Length: 126
Image (cartoon, rainbow, N blue to C red; front, top):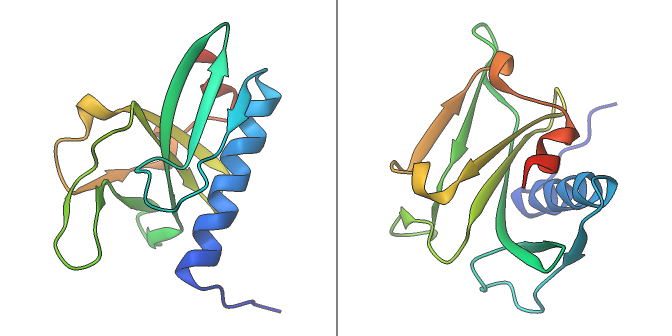
């Protein structure tokens, strides 16, 4: 049985999944009270804090097995994400993660292949 999820529900699942991976790697995870902070979670370990925006996607090109993540914010006018240290991308269908320093997000959309994805352990490198 296929469940249709809204974009907001998919986003919430992504944040929960990334939060779980961070906790598993030994981080304390903080969340903002507002939805407009620019980041979804803050990962802390040994007094080092990392602001993380989470992006979730499913396969966009099934025949080529590619994922597309929007590395921008705003619903009407797209602009590059600011005020974060990393973008954590999670491919829902294959449970793969990408951790991208914000300085490498130079376009509004980034595409990845599964071969470049990693397990939840990718967060241990923070």
